[in-house]
Length: 212
Image (cartoon, rainbow, N blue to C red):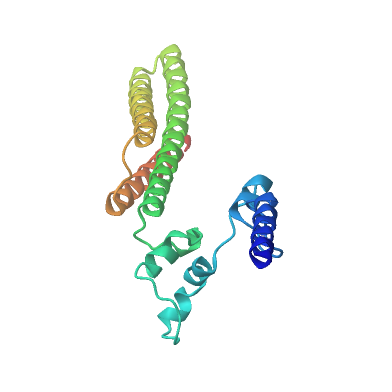
């Protein structure tokens, strides 16, 4: 009977001790998810998740005992840091950027050609004015044949002024339009560059003729 009373008393003391202890008491050296959440830190990786995170390369090399999840390759790809230097030549964003640069180069060539034609127009305008002055001089001296020849030369220069100004305006319009168009195909861009360069060369030759 005494043994029974002692056993019951010991049992009651044990129950009281256990019930008074904190329900979620932390074990020394172990950090729980709740502790991390309270500190504003990400939850600690469990042992299994650490194996999953670091076993990819080892599993790929056939290391015995390495964890090889079925989606290890895609897992590594998803978490890889993007590097623009590793983009392939057919990468859509890079290709789009390069083709936009092609458009910009063609625009620059067209604007340069427009400036060359504008300079040619100015040179022919000056030449036309000089010939009109010469025609007036011949008229004053009574040399009608020379006057007529000077007037014809002045009119030819006037026609070239109009022509060069028209071409310059067209080149500027084309350059503006390229800024709103889809990227050019490389072959089309090369053709337009040659066209713009040839047009600028023609304008420079014409300007030199007007000045001589």
